[in-house]
Length: 165
Image 1 (cartoon, rainbow, N blue to C red):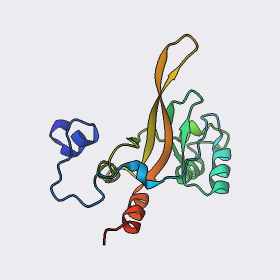
Image 2 (image 1 turned 180 degrees about the vertical axis):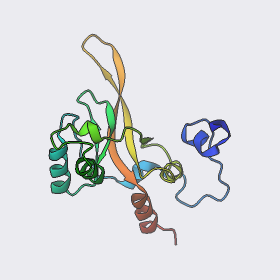
Image 3 (image 1 turned 90 degrees about the horizontal axis):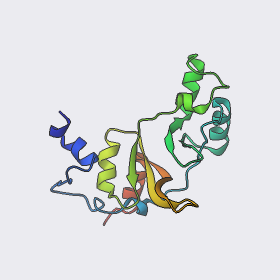
Image 4 (image 1 turned 135 degrees about the vertical axis):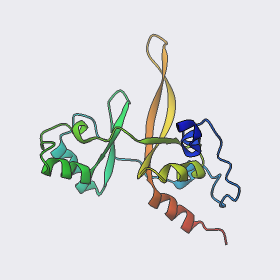
């Protein structure tokens, strides 16, 4: 049934979005949002430490990224607190126990129109950039770096601050 769902097709790159009356910001690239660098948590950080770090630094969420660069998901302050209080996780558990592993990724070169479509279904999207890395033996692999986390509020703020007169 997904192939008859245009939003799914657009989100997964099988179809170009052909909205007829696009707003002025539709084709602007995600990189123009000027996102601040995200706070990254390693998977072994405990739930208690994650709560402390997020509160101290004033963040609601943070990507969880392995030292290898593999993006494992997103941890949110509210989900971590709720999970611990409900008994589904302990303060001493690694943050991976409360990490959302379903998330949307968008590139710096993608359009704000594509981002807008993602944010209709998701609370946030991770802004990632792929980089080719080479090891000592000459083999290469693509590594994704998290450039930021973007929410509908970030998009709305950008649009309202830059509204065409």
